[in-house]
Image (cartoon, rainbow, N blue to C red; front, side, top):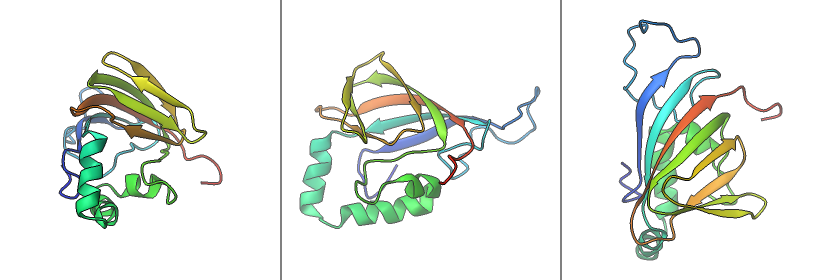
Length: 158
């Protein structure tokens, strides 16, 4: 949970290292490691909840500095996600990962950096290949999603 972004939740349910073994190596796979993106070849199973956009708009009206507060909190809690966020559009981010995302409840809009938008509903699946994207929740209820992130080497030049 984020104090500066009410209703935004991000939880790591499981992590695997780049070269998993059975039985596991003894490292706690459910303990958050402070990274959204796994190392190349590793995986993270993430659950996330997006509050309605209207709730964030109302919070921004009350506190115009909220985006800066959120970015400061994000830099502490999940620094690699903070680094992946576009300075021009704080909702837009790209990570060194292939993400398999499934909408569990609610509706979301996936927006790409080229202006393309796609509405996704429960049961819809999208695969992100490191593309810059943003998530929006135009509905009245929180949207819940699950994603498996597979770490990849960073793009050359990044």
